[in-house]
Length: 320
Image 1: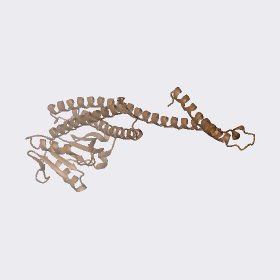
Image 2 (image 1 turned 180 degrees about the vertical axis):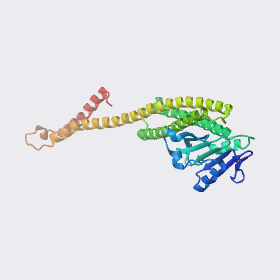
Image 3 (image 1 turned 135 degrees about the horizontal axis):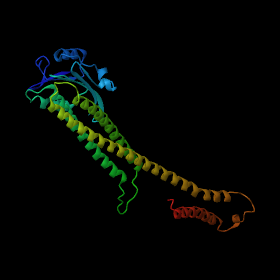
Image 4 (image 1 turned 90 degrees about the vertical axis):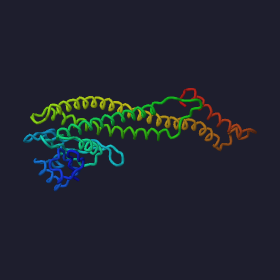
């Protein structure tokens, strides 16, 4: 799909907006990319170029045109955090964005940009960067709140009267571990986006092009500071995720140790009765208990005592 954003027309067709300041290409075909090149007046990168990770491929200047690439985090239709590459080609009069996924943020910026009069591609670029930074800030705040909730749930020690150990505790911890992993994956995508945006914003702000207005450079400088602060917050969240993952795994290990401890106690308790049964299961004529009037009861008493004594001893040791 190919859209052109012009003054007063948020989503005009390419043919009807040859003077558009912003061309937005969404998963374009080769024919659409060629058509956009004719309107823009400069060459556009391919999908393979945009996906490259080396710094020289992500930021460069050719004939006064800035070529910028960055990974962008977004939520897919299933609500899962994912990441895609996006390209920004900025010249004195036009901005061309090339992306390969539907992103409501670009549509929202297009609606706002379409209401401006006399705006340039640099204005559109600044608006997109500011919107991305705001969206990342909201996403990181949401991730931080979710980590707070998971942390309180994991370390909750409130035990009201009559408290009993909940059944399915391991299953609950596994669900918590899964959710922490999902939040960690989302934060990793946010980190990649912040690093990419920080690179292209710094490069654009310091670019040696005379057509970039000081007002746009100032806005990019402010966005750069916001990105730096979000990077610090992202590192803090990453540290919390590492601690929370270790804690949940530790609790799961404790639960498993409790299970093995119970099995060990059961096996210890079962040894004396087995010995007693084996002893009185021997068929020898000189065993005096065979002639006792209460021999059967005596055997059961020995079995019961051999069970109770180890249980009491284990309980006094605090093992159960």
